[in-house]
Amino acid sequence: MSTPSQPDWMLQAQQQGLLPPGAGLPKTDRPWPVKLLTALGAWLAVIPFLIFLALLLGRAWEHGPTAYVTGLVLLAASVGLLRAGSAGRFLEQLALPLLMLGLGSLGYALGRDLPHRAAPALGLLICAGLVLALPRHWLRLILGMAGAWLCMALVQGPHWVASDLAPLWWSVYLSLGLWGLAQAWLHAQGLRASGAASAALAEPVIQGWGLGLLPVLVWLSGPTFLMGGALGSGLARELHAVFGAHLWASGRMGPATLSVLAAVLGLLALPRAWPALRQLRLLLPGLLLAALAFVLPALGACLLILSLALVRGRRVLALSAAGVALWVLGSFYYRLDVPLADKALILAASGAALGAWLWLTTGRRPRPAGFEMPSGAARWTIPLCGLLSLGLVNALVWQKEQLIAQGRPVFVKLAPVDPRSLIQGDYMRLNFALPTLPPVAELAGPWRARPRLEAQLDARGVLTEVRLLAPQEAPAAGSQLLALSPVNGQWTLVSDAWYFQEGQEPLFRAAAYGEFRVLPDGRALLVGLADRNLRRLP
Image (cartoon, rainbow, N blue to C red; front, side):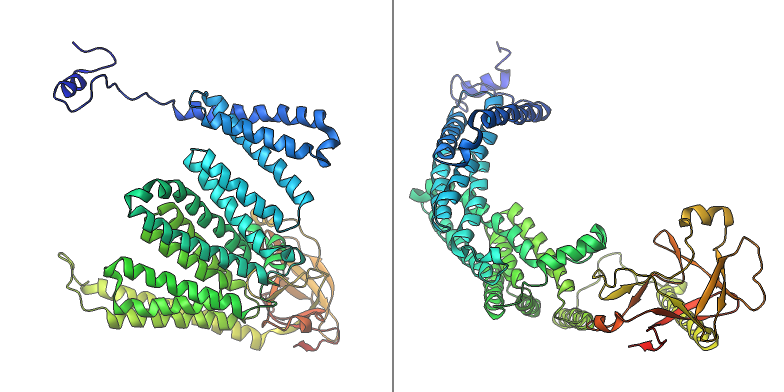
């Protein structure tokens, strides 16, 4: 006879000796919405507690031992709640914000009273004590991340505050070396039965240490490719000014050499662990990655973390390192010490060499079953589409060349605007002295045609008087017709940007006019910029 808590199959398993007597079903955990609401309630309960502490302590927390006492009391309370097996879910969730408050209070007090290297050293000891005291895996992971940052602060000292980031590279790679040694120790301990307990204790801390290094590598790399387009030109320019301009101001060879060394070690670790990767055709990709690691100091660290995480089977760490490696590769776009054309040539040559190498080193493989080469008209589809694409591009080029040859020179005065942006290479934003028009959405629909301007030119071809024509209105005799184009939701003349070669930005600061070629029907093309004397720049 089975009870509600013990089904028939469990009783039979106990009778056959497969389960111990008295075994029951595992306790069902609470649903995740209940957990989420409980955690939210615990975090919200901290807010009035913070208000109470602020009213109770006042400014006494800023001076004297109050911060130490507060931090130690909060740490003791949080550790007690986390270690208590009978604590409810609400109290367990409440322990985490209390732990963070206690660490913040102690960190403030230590940073206030101790030298710059003594504070992070004592912080590392506190983190080590919490690792031994707290039984939660995810808490030890977070403490490992905090340990990596404290270690870099301990090595780095106060120099990075003065924007001298070269020593920070050394601290990053020293922390990375310690992490690599810890991985080797963890592997050796895991192979011995006597070291299994210590390996289980240290494993989340070491993985958290590696995760803590990744955001620092992102910060040091600066903005990545297309991030500026997603965040806006102003923010991208500010981010580049903060992150990208001074990273290589000094100490270039040291971080570059360490990056190459880390990349080589990481690339050697994979074939040693997986013999299937010991192939000749993988040699050139590895060399290309090592070469890029010299140009991008953060790439070598990412490759080493990625390789060791794959060898150890740590999927979360491996995926995180792969994402940061892609970020670092994309940051190559914003390296202003390398011209944009050279960067494109490097990437194109690397891709061509990689493709040719893989084609030469990969043997002929049999076609899969059911695969047939296209026949009849289908086999001509791809080359025909290629010819049509080339024809369309060349037709557009021929059309622009005819407009330049036959168009009338017209100079339009530039209005003040931000002279430079760093989203897609170097270019100047243009704002012409034209009548203010409503947005594109208000004019394009009712008119069903682009707005036109009637302009008068002086003897030099400079635009003087400009008037917006009504729909279907014919321009006056002797005037020049100009058709406007929609750009970024506003109407402008042809384009709102002029691209130029990197390094020529000071020359284009003298631009005062945009030089156009205009046909009688109003079609125009921007062919250059001119100074106040109508001389072409540069």
